[in-house]
Amino acid sequence: MARQAQTSTAVLGVLSIGSLTGYEIRQAISTVLGHFWHESFGQIYPCLADLEADGLVHATPGERSGSNRYEITAAGRQRLRELLATTPSAAPPRNGVLLRVFFGQSLAPADLDALLDDVVSEATGRLATYAGIRAAIVGDPAYPEHGRYWEATIRAGELTAQSQLVWATETRGTLLPPATIPAP
Amino acid sequence: MARQAQTSTAVLGVLSIGSLTGYEIRQAISTVLGHFWHESFGQIYPCLADLEADGLVHATPGERSGSNRYEITAAGRQRLRELLATTPSAAPPRNGVLLRVFFGQSLAPADLDALLDDVVSEATGRLATYAGIRAAIVGDPAYPEHGRYWEATIRAGELTAQSQLVWATETRGTLLPPATIPAP
DNA sequence: TCCGTCATGTAAATGGTTACATGATTCG
DNA sequence: CGAATCATGTAACCATTTACATGACGGA
Image 1 (cartoon, rainbow over the protein chains, first blue to last red):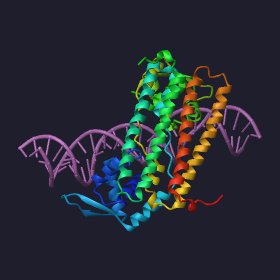
Image 2 (cartoon, rainbow over the protein chains, first blue to last red; image 1 turned 135 degrees about the horizontal axis):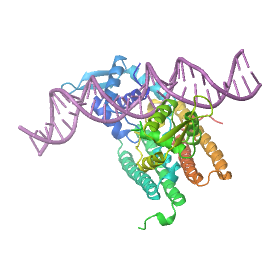
Image 3 (cartoon, chains in turn cyan, green, yellow, orange; image 1 turned 180 degrees about the horizontal axis):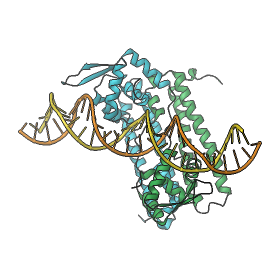
């Protein structure tokens, strides 16, 4: 059994595109999948060991001494297909912003204002990031079929960020009396 | 130190509205905060013990033998205000749907279709739930000021669900050739 | 009487992050 | 040479879930 299904899926996924070292796997996950996924070294290395024990990946000595280059095996591709067909396990919800807004009565207007401000700048920042990624993958034909799926995940991020922007603006109008908003 | 800031905030929050037993706290969190927050018994009872040790809540024997009714103290209200003013810690992202879509090349069209279907029905279901809650709190004047904040959290859920609906529909159109979609 | 709900709590396992230890290689 | 980066791995810790153990009370 390969440790945790979620981590295995992400690792086998990136290895299905190309062979990488553990270090590079982590880089790939944080740069390419970063806007919707996360893995730390403490997860990746033990997971790779398990995957190798199960014959789902194969390690060959890398260019540097002591480094391993992992490639996915046929069994690994099969396993990836199975893992992807699984229905995703929904994480129990824990939205810190909404928790604070819900108890907004116990929160100073200035703090609520700051909270909503953070949501706006967070969402705005992410929209800028997505625009950059989109421009990069649309221009580059290096991602033949894969780019279409990549773009769909970017689109999800955009829609989420946009709805957060709408919510924060709306909510500021509803919950904060105009007088409490500092003039520009 | 009261165990974990997140759990303490939720527990102190519900106790700021009224006195409850541990069992009722859990119920309140799952029914009222359920669409954006979650706590299990294994978290709540130890947290209550810590909060009491810190003088933030006060336990009195409940109606039933062996039960405790907790009420928030003045120090507890103060602590809640401090906790709410804290910037929420962003959980590392882990979106199982997007992970599957990203590696959609390794996924059979039927499975991708099922995945998007799940997103649609999930979002649709949540919209119905929100409509119900909204009707209940708008009609009932039992929530004097609090209802405004409650409604803002419902609104956030609605916008999120709507954007997921848009995304799933859009994505189905982009990634799934019409032929693979079973006729109605 | 027995079942369901109310009620409290703990132990074990899980999933994950963080920090640390180690060392090779590259580049200025 | 020294700093940054590449690279691997482990140990400790943390938050949280799950399962379990226990028992009171009310109503069918």
